[in-house]
Image (cartoon, rainbow, N blue to C red; front, side, top):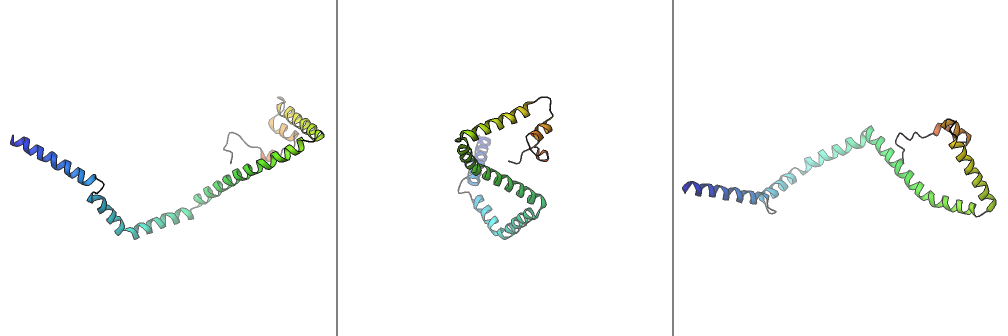
Length: 142
């Protein structure tokens, strides 16, 4: 009986300590906050050094430039899309221009679907500079 009472007391103490240290109003929470506050200047210096190292690294500069170009390209393309549609609609409203566009598209499609020509030759046939050929196995920048 005495052993059971001691065991019950241990369990109660364990439970009380656990609740006291993990509850919302735990003294441990405020102790950690106080400790962090006391060391806030040192934490600030460490944070500033980390940010400075990042901003001064060549890798970050390259990644930042690439991401800025990618985002700018997406914005410009999305804005340009509406303008392009307006221009195309204006051209399509003229029957002569519409016929010329249709013939040009047919010519491009026929040249690109000719199975006997290599891709680069097909691009040359439709006046696409081959130095700007995109390899679709690689990541496209936008």
